[in-house]
Amino acid sequence: MRLDKLLANIGYGSRKEVKKVLKDGIVMVNQVVVKDGKAHVNPTDDFITIHGEQVVYKEFIYLMMNKPQGVISATEDYHEKTVLDLLEIQDSVQNPFPVGRLDKDTEGLLLLTNDGQLAHRLLSPKKHVPKTYFAVIEGKVLQTDVEAFKSGVILDDGYHTKPGELKILKSGIRSDIELTITEGKFHQVKRMFEAVGKKVVYLKRISMGPLMLDEDLQLGQYRELTDEEIQLLKDYQTPNEIS
Image 1: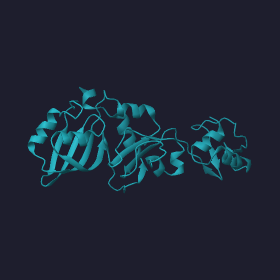
Image 2: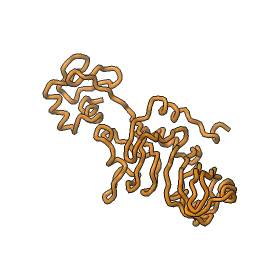
Image 3: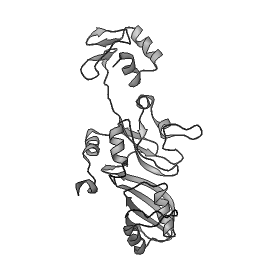
Image 4: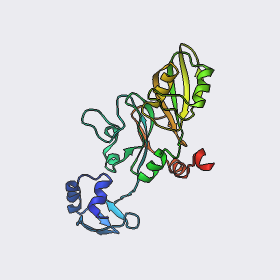
């Protein structure tokens, strides 16, 4: 990899800014000053420092975000604020993208990464990766709804959903529930409740596969996944795969 590309990718500025850093003679590769941005380096084997501090290059970035309402799950948009707009420059330069989508008015767990292989595996319809949501429902959620979701419901376009696991946390004029589904149709949770005559008034995703939302993250905050969480995602097998 070219040295200037490596430095730009990990947040040391644009190619122009990196060129100035190199010109200043503060970049060393294996304890030798290198000023030529075209010089090729091996990010894993070469010892690279700037001002004496080691440069750590990561090929992939894995971020967990507690997505707030009013932000769309996209890499760019000319009219709306996107989840990438919430990232610090040192994270956005690695070009992460949201794995899947949360509606604009939905909060909660969103994974962002530049690991296309992992993202494909988590999003593949064949994998049936479970996603769990907490929701507040206008109206009393009943055991009959639990049974209906267990069999799958018919959406407004005639699609018969796969079974969903509905748990009633509180039933009343407004009900609190948790719902686990294994597919991701457009507005699916909202449309599933509409199919049984009820309305979602608040929706938050709390898990995706083995990854649980870190409740210490405030809305709009994010953090890198731990090595353990990354390994859990990479090793994860859905019940469908195990069987």
